[in-house]
Each structure stands twice: as C-alpha cells, then as structure tokens.
Length: 121
Image (cartoon, rainbow, N blue to C red; front, side, top):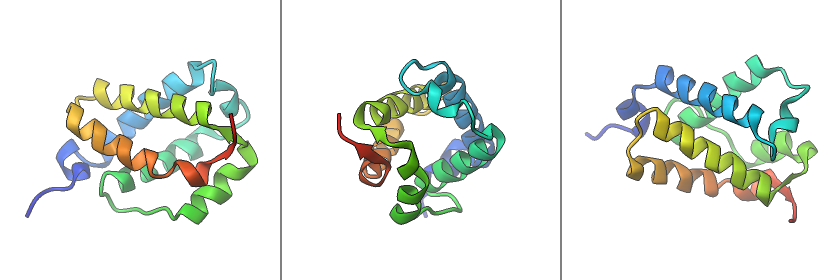
C-alpha cells in the first residue's frame, strides 16, 4: 500500500512548518499581506494546517461550500490567489518537497480556485 503525500512528507509536524513559512511570506507580500492585518493568526494557522493536511491526503476535509463561505467576505481576486499559490509552492520547496510533489499539491490548490476567488481581475 502506498503512502499518502501527507505520510510521505512527515505528517502534521511538516505541514505545520510549511504553513508557518507560508504565512511568514504572506504577511510580507505586497499583494496579500493586508488581508491578515486583523486576523487571529493562531486560529488561521490551525485551519490552514488542517486544510493543507487534507490536500496532502491527511485526516481532514474541507468542502467547496465551506471554502466559499469562509473566503466570500474577502473578495479575493485571481491575482491574490496566484500570489498565495506562488508563496505556498515556495514554502513547500523550502521544506524539501520534491518538484513532482509540489506540482501535485499545486494542482489540488488550483482545483479549489473557483470557490475562493470572488472578484474578477
């Protein structure tokens, strides 16, 4: 039986580190940094760690409807989403994910664009 990417990468501990690196980058981003000014980062990091874990085949799941509800008030654009994806790919690479594994993750991220992006560019 083959391992999920979640198991292969080292599970929750690795995903947590990736998410922390991602948010370090996101907070510095001119494109998306402002979205996090009034956010409970501890809570957001917890949710994002569970979300990325789910994408990697870990023990959580998020429906498109839930993603839509959470992100709708933010009025995110395609450019915002592209920046988020770029920063996440960087974070994955910095934590030793192989290029093919990063591509798999990014395909899963791209598949969730529609419920998250609400503003046209």
